[in-house]
Image (cartoon, rainbow, N blue to C red):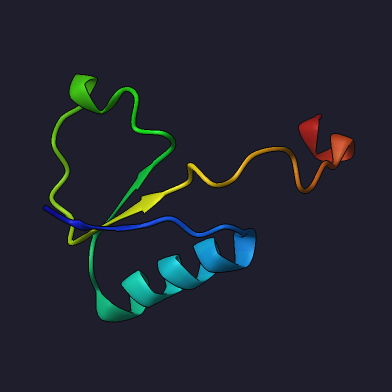
Length: 65
């Protein structure tokens, strides 16, 4: 079973991704994991769970065009 990381903010997510990239390790990213059974298995040493994050932190409507 892979180690699960669940950062509480955007900085924690960025740090986890940077650490995995620096180590050359694959990282599985999931929201709340409700659809995990529908997907193909991912071979990763760590799972980055985004379950502690919610809401919009940056909104730039001009980029939506």
